[in-house]
Amino acid sequence: QVQLVESGGGLVQAGGSLRLSCKFSGSSFSLYTMAWHRQAPGNERELVAAGYGGATHYADSVKARFTISRDNAKNTVYLQMNSLKPEDTAVYYCAAKPRGNRDYNYWGQGTQVTVSS
Image 1 (cartoon, rainbow, N blue to C red):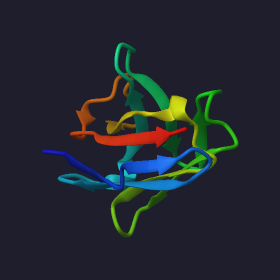
Image 2 (cartoon, rainbow, N blue to C red; image 1 turned 180 degrees about the vertical axis):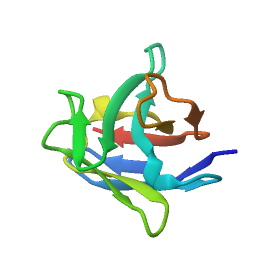
Image 3 (tube, helix red, strand yellow; image 1 turned 180 degrees about the horizontal axis):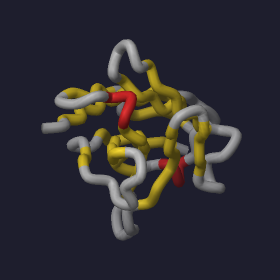
C-alpha cells in the first residue's frame, strides 16, 4: 500500500521561501506521477504542481515561483516555494497516481503553510 508523508510546512513572511518534502513508500516510486495540491479554508482543493517523467505542470498562480522535483533514489518529491504570498496560505497535500491514471489514488496527511503579510 502506497504511503505518503509530507514535511516542511510552517510559517514564513511574504517574500520568503519554503521547501516541502514528501516521502513515498509501498510501491515503485518511478512508476507514479507525483503532484502537490493545496486547499485554503473555504476553497476547493487545487492542483499546484505535477511531475511525470521529465515533464512538469504548474498552476498559473505559482508559475515561476514554485518548482516540483523528485529524487528517485530517495523516493521523495519536493516542492520548492519561493516569493511566497499570503494567498499561498493553505494546507498542502502530496498525491500520487500510477502513470496513465486520471485520478490521484493516494494522498498524504497534509502540511500547513502560512504566509504572513
